Image (cartoon, helix red, strand yellow):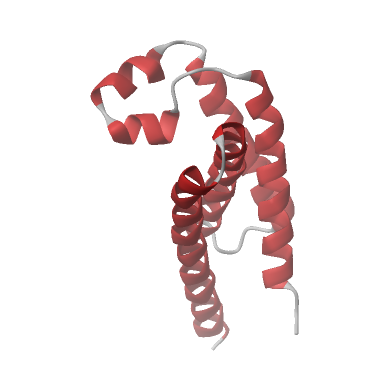
Length: 132
């Protein structure tokens, strides 16, 4: 019975994470049409890490917010530092998906906005996981 309960909870968490990921993508794409230049870029950076956070929870539904946040932040930072190699920019010339996932240009301020995204993901995750 405990396994059934745990599996049911994991499924609910995965469905919520999938919904959060879809909503994050929609808000991110929508923000480009609503926010002016730098505002859209900042929103995109924050939401990028929120999306990574949701994908972490989707992959590991029992992960705690205190663990998911640094994982999402680490992935976001790794992708940002990878941009310094020039490889993502080259891949982006051939693929829109590569451009969306990897970006093109290393930008130091993005590192801060990823911290904000990890913090936002952690806040939402803790609120959603709170009993009651």
